[in-house]
Image (cartoon, each protein chain N blue to C red):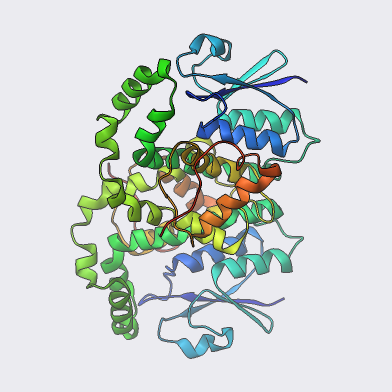
Length: 234
Length: 234
């Protein structure tokens, strides 16, 4: 076993910020698997060509290359069955998929708040690629996408109601302990924390309390990584 | 064991339509537990007073009264552990809660389309109560709430994206077989089918295919119950 993770980095190589890579960083810690992380920039497509696609996370386990956070999580569960389970059984694995999808949609929702902040952290050599590809995807400039973000904050917080109601009743989506479902949803929030001071969550939001528990997990793996202070403002 | 379920009925006692009661009807079938259903109308609060609250579903197991669909599902899982599991384990049970919440929110979203259709099916003696209580809750008349429902359909379908993406990849939220997560989300769709001909889903929507599988489950328990033909229109 020799695990390597290609992990998105920006101008600061010590500030990993990809929402999808953070899922896998947390999953690897959950599995108690040591990993060598390789800072990677958007335009370094050649470095991960053997994965058959052009995005991170990419995990390399000896000579096996796996891409896509959901695929990697499933690979880890199957390849390392004696390590703590990421899903909690086969039914739980099926039930987890919706969290992965909810997390993916959170990325799109959060991007409308932090697009310019992310751009600020992207490596110089990636900036043109980042701006062009993202503006093409959303059909407008990053500035227009973000617009008057304060005016959309109430709507965004309202959209989180299903997560909030669940976290009012239990510590983690996985119950008493976090599971991959938690990492799938946490990744986007950690992405925001690493790149933007914008207060997405109110201080008294149960999601903010859960986020703090996630930041503290695994000896503060996520919380000690460079990011903005989260002093949520109402 | 003698199970009785107080189940919402309308003018037609043979057309149960509560989204929350349907969750429990499906859960009882899943658990292979026979049940006597008692048609109940909104204003018959006295009949279920022993449950300590005023809504259905209410399950009576010998002399034990249990209310609230999530509480009932948990009761059934604990009281009948040798019957097929509703959740799929303890992690899966925790992960299921978000489906219950998503289902609850679906009720609110769908009500904006079918409020007048539901009203049409409510028993005469319940009509004033139903209209007054619902209009108070939403802060407008039922007619204003429904408004131009066609204009909101694209938005509603877009909101279902997390469910759709999951059901593109697997037959049920629970995987190869339905679990309580499926019943929690199906209840609101069955409520709509029982009361309204309005085509909430497009024919080629993976959610529509899943709904059909749910209607067919347990010998067509839900599909054979009186409701509108679902010939989804694009």
